[in-house]
Amino acid sequence: MRVQGGQRWAVLAAVALSLAACRRGADAPPRLHLLNASYDPTRELYADLNAAFGRHRRAVGAPEVEIRQSHGGSGKQARAVLDGLEADVVTLALAYDIEVLAKAGLVPPGWQDSLPHRSAPYTSTVVFVVRKGNPLRIRGWTDLERKGVQVIAPNPRTSGGARWGYLAAWGAALRRNGGDEKKARESVAALYANVPVLDTGARGASTTFAERGVGDVLLAWENEALLLADEIGKDRFDIVVPKVSILAEPPVAVVDKYAGKHGTRAVAREYLEFLYSEEGQEIAARHHFRPRSAEAAERHAARFPRLELFTIDEAFGGWESAQRTHFAEGAIFDQIAVAQARR
Amino acid sequence: MRARRGRGILPGFRLSLGTSLLYLALLVLVPLAGVALRGATSSWEDIWRAATSARALASFRLSFLASLGAGAANAAGGLLIAWVLVRYRFAGRSVLDALVDVPFALPTAVAGLALTAVYSAEGWVGRWLAPLGIRVAYAPAGVWLAMTFVGLPFVVRTVQPVLAEMDTHLEEAAAVLGAGRLQAFSRVIFPTILPAVLTGFTLAVARALGEYGSIVFISGNLPLRTEIAPLLIVARLEQYDYAGATALALVLLLASFALLFATNVLQRWSVRRLGPAPG
Image (tube, rainbow over all chains, first blue to last red; front, side, top):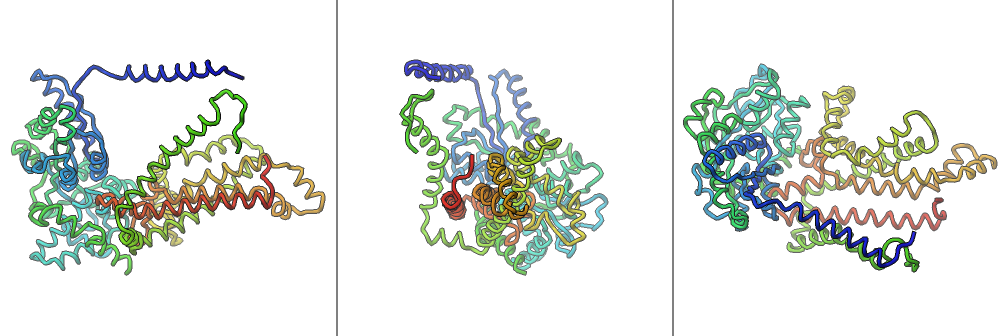
């Protein structure tokens, strides 16, 4: 078939025009949007929180806000924002990932003090999930170092959540041994010698433990552990809470640069403040995160046993230094891993 | 190739070449240049050190050996499947034909989870292998298995059309001239399909080298033992170490490019030696 030159261009022009028309149709009337870049296990939590925030806005007669969620590994999300994902707020697993955004000028330098409780509206800790009935009688951290106990833990090099687990083990060992770094290192090395699979993320490790049936103990965030024990594997798992563990503080922040650009600074801040409200705290508790509010904590006291918790600032002098000494290329975690593989 | 002067249905040679180049540039060249430029911000010593650490070397060894092994397995298995699909007519043939493409369409994470479920010590297959002392999941064999899975379609899809177009008279002639079945295959059929097998093999190896999604589920990711190179790249990105990640990426990139280039050369050599593949 032959088409004349003129006709040919007419066809192309028609295609271009119809594409342009599609584009125009996509423009909706101006509306308030927020994009919340969060990490993986908060999917259900923020689905509920966003709905509650919407109800709250309607109740006070404020204009409607549409909140969009993006979920992924904490570090991956921070990199996405760094590379131009225009999130108005970030709600990540560790302060280190927001610190990176602060260094790039996306978040103001004093971000951690701009909201209560070092910008962490809810907390969690690291606990053990064991098979029903706890056949190996796992009670505390030293039991994870025993020969023949298989521990499932994600890889601290690829997972932010896994770093909390590693640091919990290290900090607990430090406390046991009066601050002796060498002993702590031996303890942590013995623990990771018992790890047959280093999954790349926390959910992967849960799957290996729960679905593959690999391992005797899963080192997990308390919220993941409760999800596993209460909802996924009723009657298949028990949770063992050690005497000492880390206070995991997943932080939140307004991404000032993008919120400013979108004109959403005020509503973004209001959204994060809502997380601290009684309603927000109640929802967080229902999704297995430890609330900051005393009343909500009281109501859910049965599900969150008391234990001695240390913070990353107390035990490690903050993320920056923990990162440098433990997780950087060739740092302690790498040394432990390489020494084990050589043995 | 020369431009055809005749007026076809689509705008002519210059426009189509320009569009092709733009398309390639936007999809391949510009992102690759980005990788190279990011790597260029660090010194050669840094790149060398990042790419030659004990863990990096162990991961390269595993990645390259396992992907070559996967390519070889697929060359043999793929050839067999292509043969069966082309030469025989049987019930369910079209289903089998469609099944070959599944590894292309399936999200690799799903593939990884499924393979791990089947081959772990508690899985359907794994529980029979475990007493024999064979570990697949959380061992190097698992890496090879996942790579073989994702590379399966390549050899089948490159060999299939060549086999289908092959003139069966050649085989008949060989038989008439007294060749046995084995001889007919090795002297007549195999030389004809060899270039296609080679192409499929290289594509499968290159694909396996870059595979990440399915392998991280089945390998166990143990340092120096079952860590693949792409995992180390992700681990470095997780520390915001773009330069270190790029150093590893450059090595993988050069290796893939060398592989693909080698195929092209082999391809041309075999065409010159054996004449163009029929069809």
